[in-house]
Length: 309
Image (cartoon, rainbow, N blue to C red):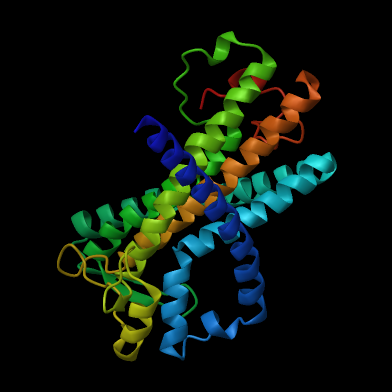
């Protein structure tokens, strides 16, 4: 019995390894096929193409396409380190640029809150019209008040990887500060590959279908199969979520689902950037720590105040 169990376990392991390599090979095929046939998933005038886009965006097939691309870039980078540094700089530039732009939503939120308080409480206005160039829109004060949640979500979702690059994220440190440079980089590589990346990818696969459940009918789920979606495409139609939590309130709550995906995409890219940077700093030694790191500064002569705001 014990020998049979061992044989069965080895067989399952061999089958899992074979399945992994088959899926990696299919990932290359799927990526080439998608690039050579863009109309099959981008031409949404045909509802079958929309069904394919919805299915593949959170599918196992898309996951292995992503893994194949990452593996190719990683191998090239390991063989040619300047290319890997360029990847790090490019990925961190995406995080910094997105975060620096989205951070202005914080100022917009403050100004909008002041406007809502004055117009509602002081001037007793029920509606607000914004038309800086002659063309604009009119919404209730309640709409502007509730839309503050969306602006807050913009800051949280789009500034997350920016905060990571800037070193402004919260870190629970048990042993990290007491180990050497290479041990820290090894911990960083382990954390990015075992914690950051898998959790973000798994969450993406469910968040993707969560978004589309609020954009189209019939509703889709993470367990929906392609053949089922293709059959449903005959009756598929747009049904964008516009219901607000209160009368005349903010009616763009589907935007929060889009922000969730943007948040996950930024975390995935930052996990890769963090792994690559950690590897390079591990391989090149302590003198490479912080190389090309673009962090904000208060300016010359303000170094004492860095990190206190």
